[in-house]
Image 1 (cartoon, rainbow, N blue to C red):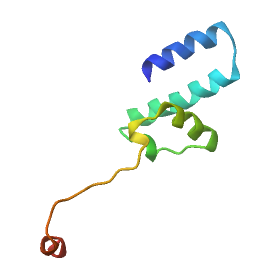
Image 2 (image 1 turned 45 degrees about the horizontal axis):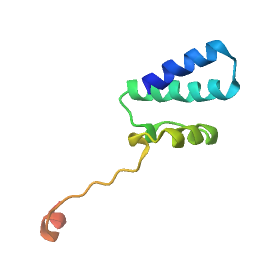
Image 3 (image 1 turned 120 degrees about the horizontal axis):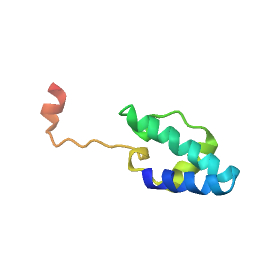
Image 4 (image 1 turned 60 degrees about the vertical axis):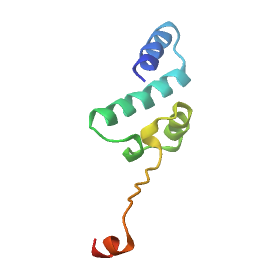
Length: 78
């Protein structure tokens, strides 16, 4: 992500493209979420932000499933 942000800054400085600015804004939000120690899926995202997030496929944007290998008796005891 840092490399992509660096590349976007260079491209934006050469030409003012709204699409590049939108992508950079979303990646800046992602960076803030990471700095808070949160996962991407826990951030507040608009519909257009989600389109950009889907292009980058962040692992922390994926749903999480926790599997526990215990017996039914242990589960009943909690």
